[in-house]
Amino acid sequence: MKFLVYFLLLAFSAFVAGHPNFAKRLDSGAGDTIPHDPGFNAAAQLIDVTGQHAYVPPNFAAGDQRGPCPALNAMANHGYLPHNGWATIQQYADASTQVFGMDHVLSTILAILGVITAGDPLAIPAGFSMGGYTQNHGGLLGGLLPPLLVGQPKGLDYTHIAYEADASIVRGDFDLFNGDAYTVQPQYFVQMYNLLFGTPGTDAVNAMQQHRCNRVKQSIAENPYYFNGPVAGFITGSVPHIFVARLFSNKSAENHIGELTPDILKSLFGVKGGPDPSTFTYEFGTEQIPNNWYKTAIGDEYGLLASVNDIVAMCSKCPIICSIGGNTGSPNSFVGVDLGSLTGGVLNAGNLLEGNNAICFALEALQIAEPSDDNGLLENVIISLLGSVLGPVLPTLGCPSLARFNYSLFDSFPGYAKAGGSKALGGT
Image (cartoon, rainbow, N blue to C red; front, top):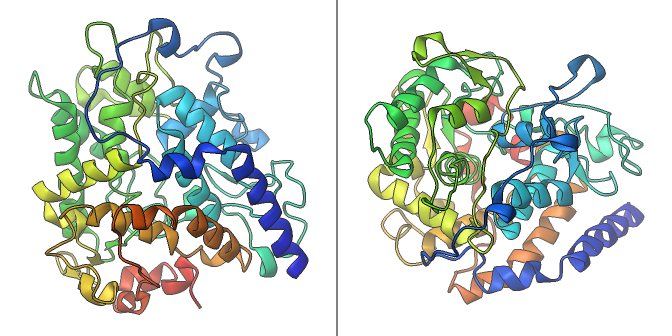
């Protein structure tokens, strides 16, 4: 066991060594929160969808994986990620920056969280499936040791309450669709589509904030087992809504912020038909990057602090989005967890949205996040390594120290218990 721990430490240390600016950029506030305009560079921002990056649909018969994230699916279909749907931390991070203009710190943190909750920590380099379980990867040591020790890498499809969350953009709640939280449900896509394009001149960010609010309220009203946790929910459940507005929009010389059109939205979500929404159809895993599509400008990448600021803006308009807790076994029975009890009195509902408290809460949640029950003992090592990267950042933001969230407060929520309770988050 000690050998394996040292091996993981060495592997992750090699990753950090290969990215010397990772901690430095976190410390300096990666993801500028001050609006600025770096201009438009057509050659640098145009995403190639020809040649080696031409669209190739997944071959599910051969074991290709696609999952709940439209951006990952699209990048795999265009060869920016491995076509089989298994990728490493570096591949996910690099592709998200290259194609969508996500800041590399944010993309790396999300990729590490994917390994913690869905991946194979012994694959060298460590990685995870963007869909379901697969052995279709060539990582050194990956899959060689018994699941009791290292766990079976189940993929993003089956990370309910650990990474994947209720009230998704267009996917169904795990408990409302018999465990299928990875397939687009057309009615939710239509809801989003109408908010974005039903009224001319609608701001995409405002529309997606409203969509997140609507989806949370809808899940509370319909799903007896709705649950909103500190990572899956507050972070990975909320910020993808803003990714749609900020990262899917097509930048141009005339519009540096970008424009999100019906055709772009449908392409990136694998939806066809229209313009009448009643004619929309979806084929699983067919997400495509549009032709003549330009990403976020170099130097204006969407980062960690900006994403948390967007979450704060959403929660200010619709507080239920950031309410940690869940339904108690029947629709519309939501009970919130007291943040003071959850954080040992450090944070509370009254001060969460003040100053840097929201970014502190998000970083602390990531630092002390727990791995999924299927992923074994060694992922605690990866969590501690992630904490060692994030830890130095917290004092620079004036963040208080949280030793651990009191996850026992969630035990009374049937949606949490039904998904495995603390074991779904890696507890014992």
